Image 1: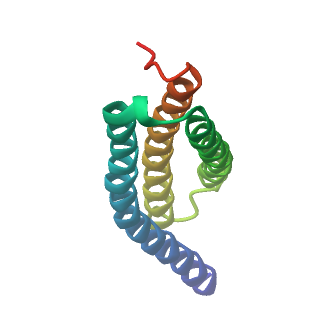
Image 2: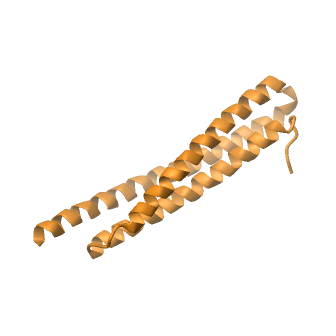
Image 3: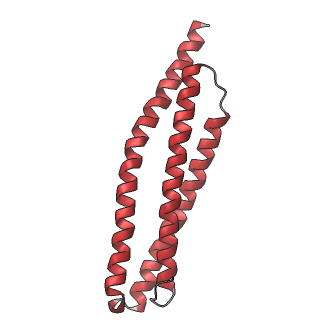
Amino acid sequence: MSRARAIVDAAAQDLEEYSEAMTDTLAQYRIHSRAMLQNFRAAYESARELWSDDTRKENRQALTGLVSAMESTLHSTAEFQATLRRLPALTGRFKRARNQAATMLGELIAEITFSNQEAKQLALDLGNGGTVAA
């Protein structure tokens, strides 16, 4: 029985390390993705009259690709989170590590969802003939 517990504890440690690493990565993603989207919007709003139809179209296509990639990531991350939540709580440590990882993934899902909505709105604005949707 002690060998099984050691294996489960090792898995719990892996989940703990994953959560810690992803928490740091999530903080960086939050900062940089929001800055990127805000800077893109500011550039567009400050000089939209200088953007040609082709420039708007190219940037809209790029944003549409970004949205598609984020939606794929959201789906995969949600599946991973659901899988983690279904794992049995073999030990107290494993249960805590599992819950910590699932919570961190929920935060990641929320942040990607926010970025996705921002990118969709930007793409919509670019598709409205250059006028920003209210």
